[in-house]
Length: 152
Image (cartoon, rainbow, N blue to C red; front, top):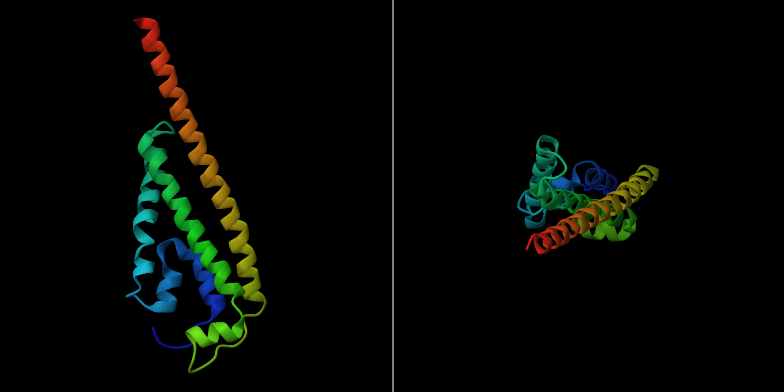
């Protein structure tokens, strides 16, 4: 993509649609391989959410797929934080060598704050969800082993 790349736009794209790689496509174009790598885990994670809605909380497939969505979101939001905190001179040297963009301003700072808030919350929720499901599976496995010993 050509034209001036604004770090505020990149930050807000990472916040709003970063799980689909749109912030990467904005900065590097549709040929960006890293942008396309966001799609599989995001779509698989969304499939996990759908499975949980249809099959309930005990669906192991959903347990495995949902954290992929969380990780995609966290990576995108971390990118938004990095974009927003990049000094203007460095941003322009990398993304706008011909036509420097104006400074990010308060809208970029607000985007960084929201990326930090949503990203931290998403990371903690993903860790909690994964750990809970892991320990529930371990407890169920242990209970199965104990009941098979008792039946023998």
